[in-house]
Length: 228
Image (cartoon, rainbow, N blue to C red; front, side, top):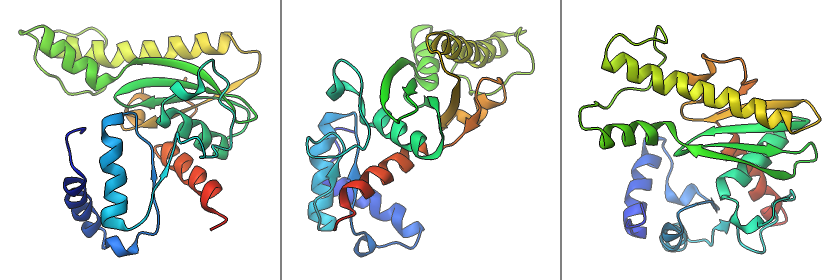
């Protein structure tokens, strides 16, 4: 939320931490990764004002990613996609495809040496459902779940089938096309909130690992802060 102030972030964050028995004083450091530039100032203010430290920023010129970003414009690659590459390479070997089910559905290609080598960005599942509902007044907002059959017998089941099996086809098709452009075998890792749901509809996803992004951020933080 680009309109949320540092103080508002602090109140929200403090409530979440309290549920886990954690206080601000227990936090030593942070790493910030965002693809929403207008939030950055207030996220950094949250750390300096309420947590009493300067956070590490993924994307800053001095931050060592530990991997090479082999694309035409490295600075244009989203922080989440870089973190996915680092986290995936940390846990899995060989050439990789990381499918992240977030606001967008992204397919990130990671070389065997850990380098980020590009990928694909498609509309996210929730975004597509919301757009379908908004654009067609007679179409309801439906839950995202695996339908019992492909052919829907009413509007709701037809929409659920289109969302679920449509995305399964998108996943399988893009993975097949990415693999066709590479000469080496590739392992596919799914991450993001809906990764487990779509795992049940296809054999194209080799692993479901919901913490890949966080693991990548933690590794980047370790690499940059280990000396201190």
